[in-house]
Image 1 (cartoon, rainbow, N blue to C red):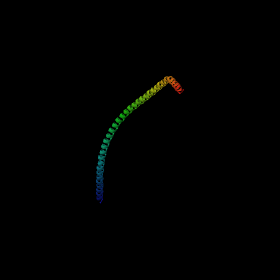
Image 2: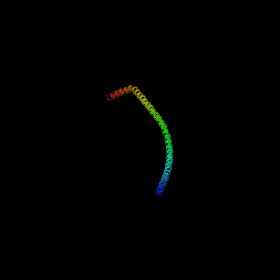
Image 3: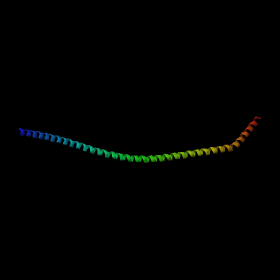
Image 4: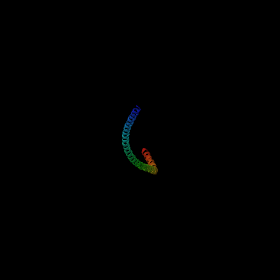
Length: 129
């Protein structure tokens, strides 16, 4: 009987080892499937990273172009402001000069006008009498 108990114990142990081996195979197959899925995800993520890197590079180029355009716009804005300021200064100077000429013309005509009004007044006074 002792021998029989030893054989039963060995059979149970072999059965347990077979179950463990089946479980290990199942776990190994599951892990292999999971590894395949992770490798696929990894490849997809690498592809996405490359696409994002390309987009970032393109946007960096666009940003540097915008910076260049901003500089050009700023220079043009400064130039236009300068031209407007100079034009305004010239207009003010011309207006001042025209005012001075007009004042001189009025001053030069004033004595003649005063003489004319005196003559006219005398004539009107003479006609009344």
